[in-house]
Length: 375
Image (cartoon, rainbow, N blue to C red):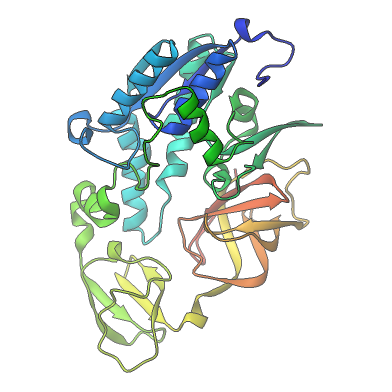
């Protein structure tokens, strides 16, 4: 039995489930309905319905909206579709494009969770009289001595904690993650047991609004002037070649440089959007031991201050955690000191803090020498 709200009977507990049309959120709705909760399904239409109907392997597309409706009908719960296209464009797509123009490597899924999926949808859930908002994310919510805590999922291969670091303590009090203790195989087994119409549906792979992973196409559509060319230079500023727009490059990139040089393998070390330079060098130049963060969300019990807090951190979702310390700086920023250098730390990505399985929060990686401020 999943106990979502302490000391409250399921039949008297209304839960809004964020239904994307995929297997995970569909099983979440079916599980809670089976256990007697008053379940309401809500699906967000985030971009053009007509253009999205034929998309495969995405999420929140036209077919997914239809799938969510079929699941709700099968489970026997009410289902609502909300048009959030304009909010999604403003809060996610535009921010994504501007980040690339600044020479950063953004993570739109985090922005989506921060804005339309948690901030806005949570308000919708409250307006519907819900006691909680449940999602199909693979992450665990644990009741700690000082309140709700965020922990990595039991299934390490599906853990989504990196993408949910910005979840605030206030939001965590209202959120529920019923799949956090399950493996993906167990979830698919439940989908089959419930005979859900999406039981065999593949997982989403691409960012929903980026077909075939072609980020530059989306950026150019939103910011047509982002294709200005420039120079590819070495660490000393010597021109090695030309490029057709910094939006085509990310930190750590090796392929696609098309340089006619006898040098050893070269990597993108940094991107200078003002000079329109793509700076390349040897892999050793990618090593970083100090990271500056902005917009830090802190979920730890201890206050984040100027005294270093030892923890583990991740700078990419698929990398294992590594030892580091986190502290506030005298100017109010947040600095991360790594025990051993990480390669390819990219501005615009997230740095997420962990204490074992517990998520202590995280922040956005800034370009060297850029100003920061902590939330």
